[in-house]
Length: 485
Image 1 (cartoon, rainbow, N blue to C red):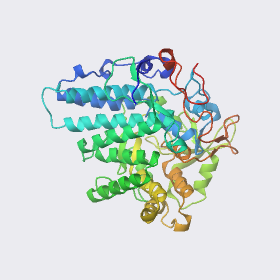
Image 2: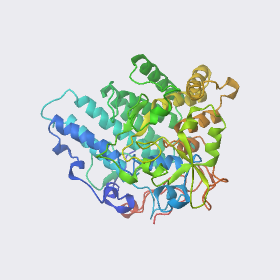
Image 3: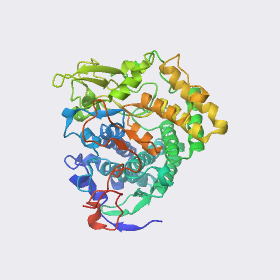
Image 4: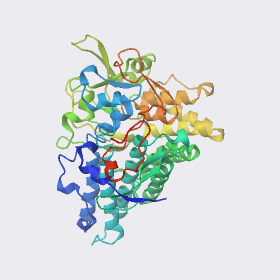
């Protein structure tokens, strides 16, 4: 049920507490209104602007990945990174006054608003000269809306499996609105239904050719499979991922990296590799600089985030796993301890000089295989054997001598493989939380006085709604464990 309120949701785009990434710098060409879109070139520029907005350090150039990893058990901040976003995420230092969400609220809603203005301009005939790409542009706008709502829902809403999606998610908008107007929070279930609907509208409109740096039909289908997985629609998740893999294999448009080419898949000069369904594209002249994920992770950058000792050792326990080649160990001159670094975002010289212009992968083909493995396992029956084969496609690729037998094919084994394959890509925290697992962070070089045990009952497992939202709508529901001020 839609309940219209007049509150400050969209105004949080302009409020520091909702993230000052574009409060401080908001170029005029990033403000998209349907009146400004009258030519196909305007549509193209507006769509490109959606991706430019995603490429914020407070969204997909850093924050989204940090949120999904340092809150889990595979990565953590270093002791000298105090004050950085990774540090506050690790310590769950969230309140309505200081939500520490960066752009994870305001930036997605800004993109959603701009995307609806693009759609309205196309649907209402405001584009004077019809272009053959208008359907694809509309599909990209719909897919961008779906991606933003997916992220909003998993950051601010409790995992679907906790209560079948009955708890509050985020406010859903189905049209472009003026500043200050929004609907109340919808349930998590309603949010996922909405995301699925937008993706199903987008997919037939989207291009089936590679469109690097943009969302095409294959990327949208991968997001659809992921969404089904998050909302426990496992049969649909498996069937969507399975058909996507079959279609990709038949077209050859993408492919799994081989064991021999695995490390090179992450090389600085191998942007838009064979697995990259959708990447945030950075260039030498347009990049997040020292605030980007690659500089944060690089030893000769900030070295603000490292692999946890436990996770690094787990990988090293299988010396035949090619993914060990993405770990480097360095000794800190201050405490003389050794730290394990992830090399998925190397500089041009790999070890010596950090880069500003790495691409960041949002959707990758390996994840689709792992979605099929997890969803098929949960669906069971006729899906189990195919699901195990998809898991072994990833396991065998990493170590040709490794194999998961049927007796060992269980959820913990799938989640373990997801951690090994997707570390540093922003998944681990969400994977554990949505499956009702407990995240344990203790021992080794884990930082002191941080939460050591986190699950979906932990009081701060999701972010709070900022107190600014309650100024005009004091009745809006806050997440459990937080106040409104």
